[in-house]
Image 1 (tube, rainbow, N blue to C red):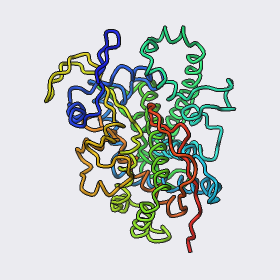
Image 2: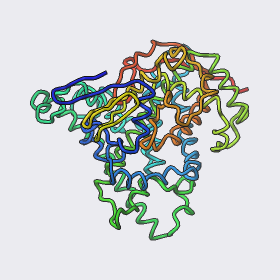
Image 3: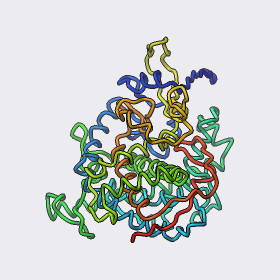
Length: 448
């Protein structure tokens, strides 16, 4: 699809072959200009930067997702999942439908804050955590104004109105929305600033007591981890430490990307499992085969890797409902592909949602059938790219997969998911949403 917007050429594609050529390119890695609408919030971190800055940031951050560190994070996944089980148990009467997304959002925020940032926020037990509400709730009694758009909803609303890409026009035409945006950004900036200050202070204290932090224990008896924030605080580029703004923009990026996308993916997966009892029962059988009927076996990356059907379930859920439904690139130089040339300056939109549900490439795309992935390699399969692909693929995809696997194992072991509530009504946003939430009911399983 080709669109001219004034002097801007936009090309939209859900074609797997063309998308593969764009995403595989090591040259065309610049994000499309609409991403700039998020820069007031997230800054120019790993998500939006390109060139030397992107390469240097990617090099710094990659070690924070090393498998050795991920294995240590399983302790946090496990501990936070216990809080989630208590919260779900309060709703598991077997007859009342509820939207599972708000619980998943608080759960994944607790995990990303403690693992990547080294700072617990207790979002699951403290409803006054404003960050979660600023990102994912339309209304909040804890803020000065009586309501505001979610930050992601507001940004998506601006995306589809070309004239509002201009900040001055947006401010003049929609001053109240601009005011809400400023308020939301302040809530999240204050939150991440507090996280950075607390972690910096902790690192200064620990460095004075012991040089090898990895051998010490924190106040809950776990070994201290090399959190992403720790890596940023101790890193240098060309011999210079990262500035507070450098660190803040990466923290904000990962606090958003690391909790909102995973919460959405988990919620849609639970929704689909509730409506597909055959898949749910088959998955439960695999969980018990790997871990036993009481889940007393400690979770390890090796065990989680052994859960192949679980991986198919997650990949099939992400195929039907990709957390990030659209990806944008700006073509800096003429791009020559198999059928022609895309000129420099083109804004290229990859519609992941349509590509992953295209009947030309996927048989019966509306059917939830995890077994379709039995013969599909997860590498370089551009008909299944929920984590993007190529040089700019999601740096935290293994983190997210392990988090989802452990979470689903815990939930299915404790609860039967029931097909109650309204069908989802997906709406394309920065992160895929459902207008009416992801509704289901739960019933506690007999563990006898």
